[in-house]
Image (cartoon, rainbow, N blue to C red):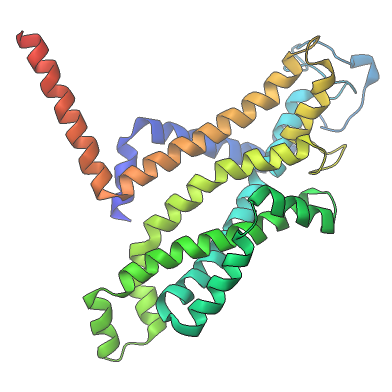
Length: 294
């Protein structure tokens, strides 16, 4: 946890945290922040340009684009975060069990993971959606069923690395229970790996859920979602390209913020990368000094 303090020295990370925090807060408070009802149809305002009352204009049904962008945070970001948390919890628990206890427990869990990971993620997601039907809830279930196996396998490798250290073996020898060893010694050292894995996955999950909604497999009308808004604006993309601009920029900004945060977390939590970054800075300073001297 002490190494997490390093992240506050990274301006890009702080900016990413600020953007993500604002987006999540706006999504939670959407009913109080949105200027209009997101599903309110007003055909007299169809394809109206931005105005003081409708800052981002209106769509093909006269609905407020800003309100729909605001409400779209819930399925596009908040729902994905919930699916990620469930995937990480399941994957972490099974990864710890497989990596620490080994034997039959490890063999059974890893064979299940092999089955789940034997198909490409998109193919598996489409198969699950085909069985369960279209809709946001079914996409989130597909995410959980796919992602937990990947988390379990990666976390298992990390746990196996630390489970063989001398202080863990000594704790076993003096009679400390396995679950107490995991809680006191293993979780603390694998926490950084779990955080980095989680932050690096959220961006791709947001893009995937937006992609499924764009294809008509995600959240259904009239509910607001960024990918579906892109699909609705596709028919007038050449005559009214600005209708695709707002949801497109929303997706880009959020995904980029999560990716920047993931990179910063990886550097802050990995001492080798911190030292490498410092060495690069020192080399750059020395080169600048030589250029000035010459």
